[in-house]
Length: 483
Image (cartoon, rainbow, N blue to C red):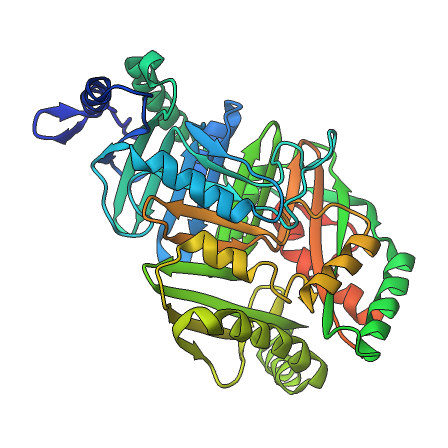
């Protein structure tokens, strides 16, 4: 693979090193603190999973955002700046901090196609916003963390762009030549056949326990269903986490390639921090914005996939006809309609749900698009929507109280918003689903089920197992699972 030289021309007679140096000289001339400085250039295409794997193998912080069906990807390596707020106001605090950093920034070479070439934040905002305790598996990720990478590679179709970021503090002391020298080494490592592995034989994964366990699950489903039946709430989502162990270290790059091959319609994501990687393949968009236009989706109500086309169609028919599944789905649609109604100029909601077929499970799905009254930005809209009833419940506050009281574990970034945010306030956030944490030989998978009045514990447990199957199959082979 050709090694990309970071000194390749950005414009006539200029290299990226010269461009950053020029921008820094401009900053010196203005006086005051050193601002964010970024330079962007077009480069040859790089395999995004191989680049992520190369960074991870060097112990570097890295992030991957991959949408195979759309031909889009973002890879971030190292960090130049980050905002890591806690609490319920983390969305607005992150948006304000990003605007302030960008206000005096000096940037060159940007393009406006999505994913945008230029400074981009990558990360997650967590399910609850509560800071994880020391020793918690989520500790490396924090309550929320949006990172401006030192190196960002964004691909959209045939175009691939590299953005190098310096600052917003410490620019004066930055060794620009040294920074430039690190990039070819990364690309060379990404071209190493060892980082572009063939899919290995599935690694056996042995369960080390679920929380809540099966007995507790049955009790909590009964409790939640009873609360819904008595009219206390419309729906509450019960999640569980299951730990697994393998005989050798789990191959994260191979898992990402498996997900990209088997779930190309989903968003493949991975965040590597401190020896732990959070990865998955989410089918559910929380929100995507372009100016005043936005896209979101209601996904709720589930059934298994069939063993053949006939059985698959029968299960889809049952899903569309199920009063229980339609009720669970309608709660999400109604909440999105009510949340968005006061702030939109136009709202387009499909008349009836359709089927979203995934590899191991199929869902009821209702796409929702519209145009906002004002250009609020991605994070302001996400703050209004998260958590939807698809991952929390309705009424929201009561459902979240029940989850906190009964679920028995920290969701961390599971079921929270993850994604990217551009310099103009636009971007895309997915809901972190079909996912897991991997650290060496250990993996922890997550899945949740919407509980309504007639929910059955056995059926909900089986649904959670089906939802874990996609990640389980990517990481290895779960003992007792013949999928």
